Length: 46
Image 1 (cartoon, one colour):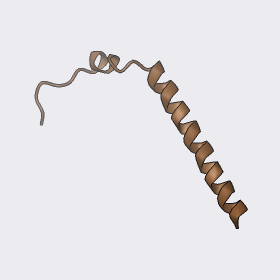
Image 2 (cartoon, helix red, strand yellow):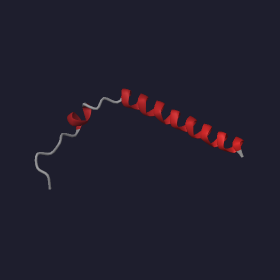
Image 3 (cartoon, one colour):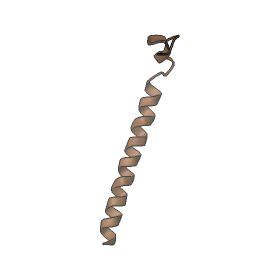
């Protein structure tokens, strides 16, 4: 029973670390300032 919990928790930690690394590299590769240049915020809101 303990081995099952350790396996599941270890797998969740691996998935979490993978997600953190992917989000880190995606956010560093994409320049967020380009979003306002490409699609400017509209002046009026509907």
